[in-house]
Image 1 (cartoon, rainbow, N blue to C red):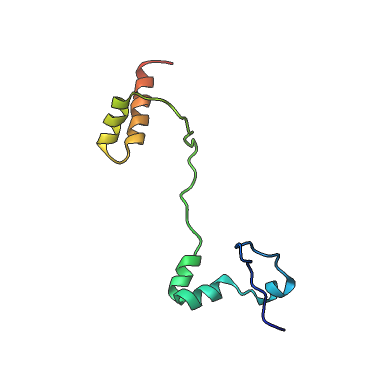
Image 2: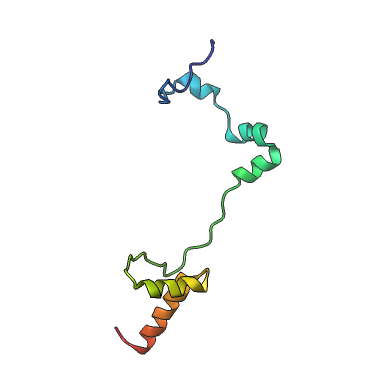
Length: 97
């Protein structure tokens, strides 16, 4: 078996992989362990844990607001979108749509 062909050409295009290329591949865990150490490698390859989906997920709606309204909510700080959502919910309690 000779020297493997480069995976990319002068333009950076990846060539079609051959059976030999696949036979030379190793599991990511092995390669990461060599590059980053076993402990960091294990951490990087650990599955990400996401929070469960809500029963009623929020829906994106692009709306246009007066600048002063948006600035006022943003000035409150982090979580301003949630507070704006809560303010609209409160409004709906008192005024039916």
